[in-house]
Image (cartoon, rainbow, N blue to C red; front, side):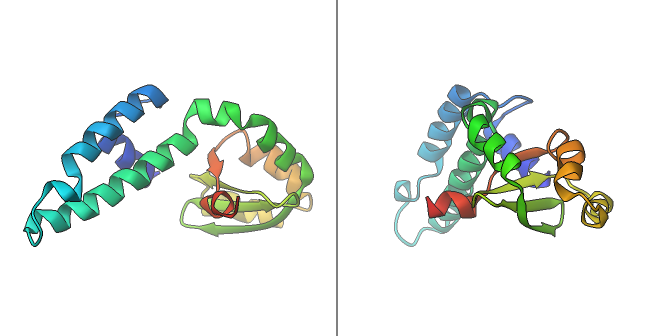
Length: 148
């Protein structure tokens, strides 16, 4: 959640992420922090490199969790949920679930107690459908996106 808030703050996004406004903000930030804008060896060039990577990562992340993106990918997401859980990993507040159809999704804000309840459940898919899917922000995992 910290990363989401950090990226929203960087792009000036309040609540809902609108792709059109996000794209405009992204372009303005890239123009401002593009490394080629600074002279070779300039101290600001190194900072611009870091900032530009952060801007690009933040943009791709926010696009992946935007309501428009989620709506467009809903049939694929629903099919993955129905296929069944093949594997899962929890780190920090991120739960990464791999499904039998090969797709992987990340769920943000999943606490350790919820994760422990999930792994102790005798019906993993049922627990996830009731307690994980409707309650947590998700996106298709970067790992899955890179494989496509």
